[in-house]
Length: 200
Image (tube, rainbow, N blue to C red; front, side, top):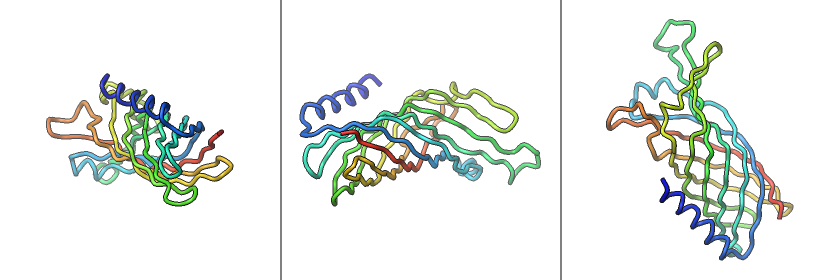
């Protein structure tokens, strides 16, 4: 973990030292989150949940076409588990809510004026996790791994006045469940739709 943090810090320092132009901004938006697992029967019970993200961004421009954009985001992920198809119980569904401090580092390539494609790694630090329905809430943080690794890719458009729009998909790479048996796994996945503003 320390090595990974050092890599992220080194990337930030290299970008700061070599960038031709630096911009800072804020962003927020919608998450369409879900989980998937190595258990196909469990996957059949899962459906997406709608959540949100918000945070700060910085863009280090190295040329007119290439830049690096690290971000620090509060992001809510998870899934909805629905036993309605296999159970007659009245209370058959609940949300798994996993909240993270996420740090994506996106390489951006501007293919046209204002329009960019992006790809990069993301590390997430678990802040809280719970299972919740209309009547009950259970803390699940001890059931989750403390970190989550994913790959992110997407596209964005930035206007001359600093307003920007972004669509991104985060593909989970690491097992987030401490309860998974040997060889089994559970991973986060999410579509993100953001709007933000660069101040300079």
